Length: 114
Image 1 (tube, rainbow, N blue to C red):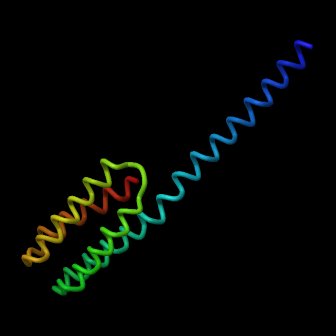
Image 2 (cartoon, rainbow, N blue to C red; image 1 turned 60 degrees about the vertical axis):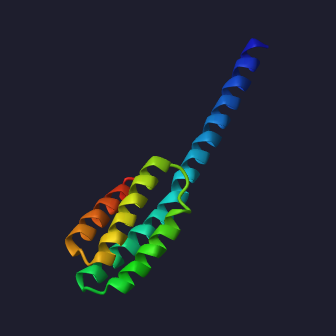
Image 3 (cartoon, rainbow, N blue to C red; image 1 turned 90 degrees about the vertical axis):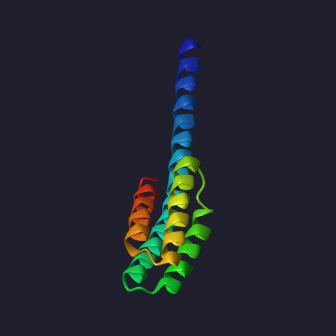
């Protein structure tokens, strides 16, 4: 009887560990497409900034900020990256190509860390 109880306990623990592992994997996989979308918009904005097309760059930056709101978890990293995107928007509006590019590159690195 003791062997049966021990075997059942081991089986239950194995199944529960497997279920928890799958849930953790599913949570991380849902964030990466959204972060990829944000990075894509920021990279498009950087390309437009280099071409001095600031209006199109601002459209991409607005889309990046809207997509970033869908990212769940990692609130401190997302908040810091969003602050850099906002600073990049402000510098883009002022025509500061180098400053906005620096801020947006830093934001991309933060989003890639997700």
